[in-house]
Image (tube, rainbow, N blue to C red; front, side, top):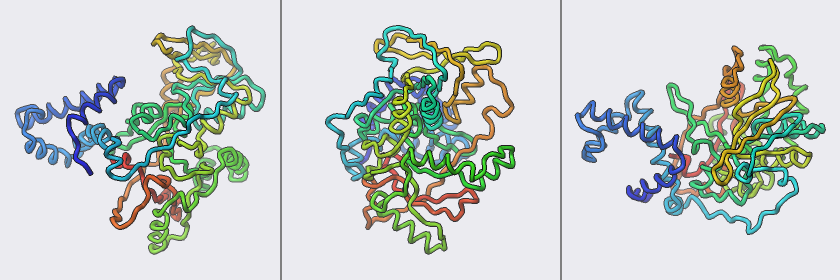
Length: 435
């Protein structure tokens, strides 16, 4: 890989962080910590030490339990700026240019979308139901309720993008589709990146498209905890309905790529029996390998191309670029929502909604935070969250072309240990994933 040009790298980072005040502050705080840590140990600021002294200090710091994690976190923006460079991608053969359509078809339902940037004045509206969020939860709720003839309004903090915006240039699409440039992390005895979407479609726009039903063992545990209705028989028609909507089917050998054969042979040699391509929501996928950065062919049925258009076709309205700020109350009843956005001139635009019901579908991380800010108190609020952290084993096959940019990032699974909560997945992640 070509060595990084420090001046070019830093100037690129300046440009990328120009409008990201929060990230700028975090980065400055991290660099100040590094300077002071070096001053405490060596008597001078880190940036005044010679390169060899800096390297020795970093090598030693990286082995410490807490500071080592902070150091890796601080290094992420620099690594990302390097691996996201188009010249680096081309030099490593990791990315062919995305062929964008010369013209994208427009549909009648798009008239149901109002962007804050296009508004000139504040708005006051009434609805039967207001839904906060357009991801997996909010979009499905909007579709089901609009099908029943209710007046539905969806509020989304992010913007609406179509496939003409999904260029494959990660420095362009990550700020558009990810919250905080994808820098959301869970901290504890390890730092785990938790990518969160901020766009119409939410995190479904940036996930890898793997679709799994809730395992029977999990449904059983839920029933033991009081959710008696969650039987496999009761859930089956709902799973089937979602799978039809999302065109869920097994990934093809061609889109999985050569990694599928490698994983299959390795798993078989170790005695695993349940080996198969993963179920995915990507009918007509041609293996662009950009699932986490917006599908440039619309093959992946994220909610921005599945549930949201169908909800709008049935009369729902979508307001993008508006952040919900306050729930309005009458006693213990929620009667409306106040949201705020900015128009193209940077002027605040207020959106006031009165409604019979409100659904908060901001995702498992932000829903409890928002409800707590609104004064909702419940001993279970924000608790019982489970994530699926992934441990990675990388292997190098110097004599094989694994077609990283011509296959889906994760396409082959080994599920023998599913009951123990473990799923093995073989994939060839984009170069950016190694930062």
